[in-house]
Image (cartoon, rainbow, N blue to C red; front, top):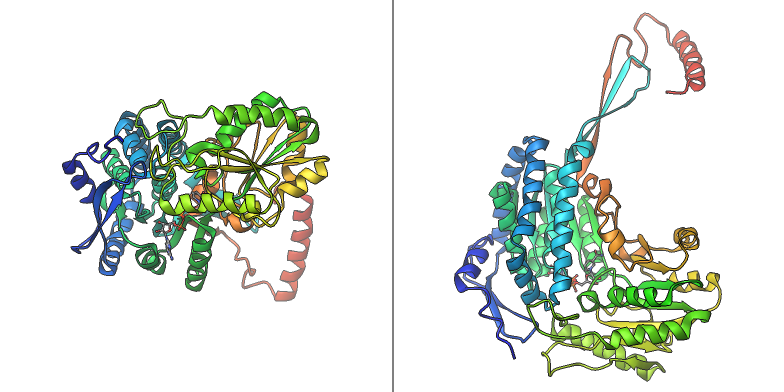
Length: 517
Ligand code: NAD
């Protein structure tokens, strides 16, 4: 079995962990999912450290919010260049901490670069004060300002340790906020390498601080102090955070779980749909919020699709390698392996058939599980409606489009959906699907990679949107500033109220007839 613990030099680990805000002697060991070998000793922050991070952040935010948009844009565009230039180390760290294959790790590099470029280029347009018509044309001049919220708490998961750690927070700092972040305890090194990049790109140190520790302790402390929370993780944790944030009346965005459907429509190219389904289901070993876990195929195509899909799934290579030669990597942990194993066993006990996969691969590494396709999954099975978050997909057939829509919309989630087939038909169907993103002839990458497009969940998959203009506006308060000229809105002193009411009535009637007001 390969040795991964020596890939990152101890001095480098020390330099990265030195970026954590901590005064304690406490630490916890992280391991690589590839082999279970120890990777690093990660210092743990205390609640006092979180307090200190917020005190520093509040001071830093005042200075940072006064920087020009041009300066922030430049830093973002430098970050774009740096993440591409230093991708080799970042790819190693992502892989070592998450166990995913290198090709799937690269998606994170690309996503961060796309995000940095998008906000770097669009920032001015998104944040510049906007003039809107006032109550009286010419007399009332109204400007809408977008004022930063203050200190944004970013709580991120392990599955996209680079992208989820940094991409959402970029919009926050671009808008003039500062960030206090808690990365997942299993993947802090990648997040810390990202913070180092931010500093090298020109973001001042105090603009992005990292604290480390258990979500229930350090994460809660962040929610108790932040002016806004950006959380990515499970629906269960997100629900608790929403309660706490609501009590404090602070805003939040929650990017949560999904049980994402793909519908293969009549007339779809079966080979292309099958190829698309493979990457839609097994990227990052299915540990991806927008990953497809339910496949609905029209009766007329079912047998052909099934054969084409299985052929491709069976040819996927699994491995623990930092090279580009592996199709699919490991699950993150023994816990995740247990969930996948349980879902498969339970589905089989409830009548499902394993078409391919269905077993762990300890011969490759302690947390590997084969890409698995089930057929005949019944509603009694846990994986029928619950998110597995692993390399497991269930295949179903359907007869009519009505039925397909109903099946796709079943359950509580609403994150992502994929439609394969004639574009016009798929576009017409999209608004009927309860999902924040709908990808046509693609699994998830078309919306994920299109930064102009807002992305997020409906129903229990979350609230708020990342990416697009909404992705940065969530971190701002809109402030309306109105200047009144010549005549007060309540009328000049010398006009009696009754006369004023008459003049106003006339004015309102005139305004009703004009186009601009
Ligand atoms: P999780 O909710 O257990 O943990 C996510 C983060 O929250 C971690 O940093 C964790 O330490 C922290 N946390 C845990 N308890 C907390 C608490 N009480 N208060 C504050 N923070 C706390 O999620 P996970 O299992 O690590 O991640 C997998 C889940 O994330 C899946 O359900 C997946 O679908 C979802 N996810 C969603 C998206 C999205 O964009 N919608 C992206 C990635 C992952």
